Image (cartoon, rainbow, N blue to C red; front, side, top):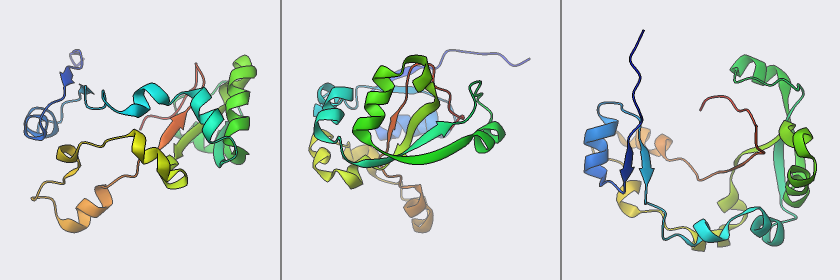
Length: 160
């Protein structure tokens, strides 16, 4: 049986330290402090999104089973996506109680839909650069768009 250990918390590591200590040896970590000064940290909550973006249409994942598990095959068989206004989704989360566990917003491209929210985040440039040793074609594919995930307490999602 393999030995387990705690995942280290690292406060605002430099890209070089992060690459050397975690990326190269493939060690997991929890990074803290990078977004502390972002307005989004204090602004973005359920009420903020309900007030500012109630009518944007999102595709909500709806689990067809009550006993959803963290199993990719089960997920593919049991989930469907349905369009819904963000405000209606948020209302459902707050009023449906345990029933709302079946609804989950995943990978929503929030900044494409509401680009004004870019003012609330400050992606640290030093972390956004792809190292020179990464081929250009691969670097383009590695660039992920920011996405919003919102789910209720007790939600289950596949490992990602």
